[in-house]
Image 1 (cartoon, helix red, strand yellow):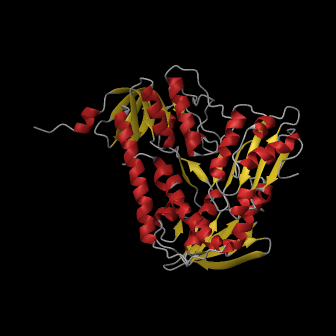
Image 2 (tube, one colour; image 1 turned 135 degrees about the horizontal axis):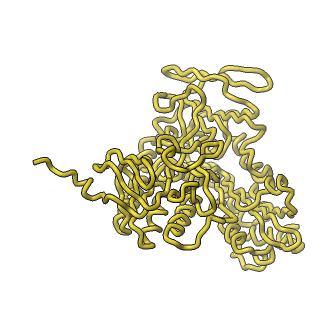
Length: 475
């Protein structure tokens, strides 16, 4: 007698909510929906839960960037009278530590699925028609659903004729995070946050890093005054930075990559042991069977959604990178919760005023709400308040006097519109700005709140004081 497939027996014919993709948006939506009493099936092609963020993005990159920060800190300590021996890099140990963190977190998410009653199946899902998914590799061919959430994320954009999967020396961010080796020379193509973060990692580990960017400055969508301290550090640390430059050709050999670079001065060739392409990300909308639904895509291939994350198909929602936006894990998580609440019949919408963005370089860079570039483009009336960290006692003790805290304030009301920070711990300091913007706080609220002394958080209060006249330690 043929033995029944146990996987098929564990998968029902129908589910209330089918979620395709188990990254931050997918698992957050699953947990929220299960908590609201819905039968939830979370479908993931990979063996582990967590998606790109946990396995090939946010978490592994921060494990390596933490090491980068430590190395930079030991180098800077000499200015305070403490000298350390040059760091010894054990790439195998770094890799094992990174993988240990990933395994711990993915294992924890798997346990949470069980604890919260989320049915987790490993399969490839495609839409087969109204209310129906085809499953490949699950032991059951189909799964019916009342509502579905697409959370399949995004992937790195490649240059023409570049195949990351079959290249030994040309990498995307996933390949760079694998840390196969530490090349003597590395070319970074793209001056966005991924290129800068990975460039700093490899530079701190011993690579000579060259960066090329098509725009006339790094991170062109970031306010120039916030970028200035980071750009100075990049110029200091990297072997070379070529702006208004593009890659015209890549020729890979067994031991190196010959690169043709073009700019206003003409074209020239350079060779590197490895090349990292970091020019953006594209949505994973292919091969989902979306042509069997009413879902529509925008001109860039992202799924079109409304503020409740509904698509044009009334039974399908889309969250995270697949639906555009800032392509950030925490944005996807909040969108997932919104979609789950809407499906459960609650009143919910994704209407965040201040989604924070953080660049984990040295120094760190973070912002939320309205940026000065956006304000200028939209012809918004605003007042920019800048508190330089050279006036902060705590920043001086840390050697962080190049940092800055910046607030954008509505002139008539004093309402906080945006916040930007460059300097150590910007990743955490930005949270006060997020809360202020979401609560509709005014500058006086921040200025009159007691901030501990001496801390970097004081810089937020003192920036707000500038709106009232002058700050205690500046102006």
